[in-house]
Length: 64
Image (cartoon, rainbow, N blue to C red; front, side, top):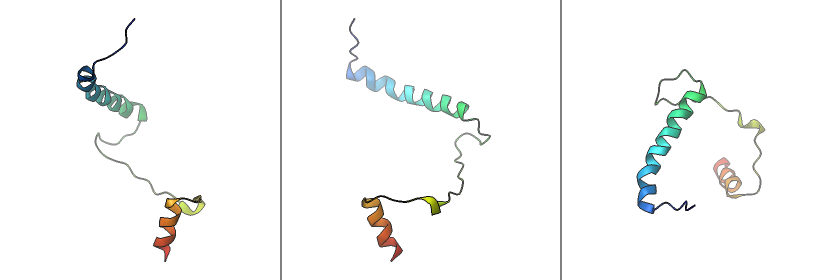
């Protein structure tokens, strides 16, 4: 059985599939926020430790 999908068909269906996933994902989240709103919560960074990386280098430069 051949499962190859032409690029053109993929590009036509991919946006619809992503929209469907986003729609279903909103329903599974169980939030009471209105569609299209973003809910932010504060995060305590005191317990976060960065390993040696470009992120640590950047954070070290910002502390100076």
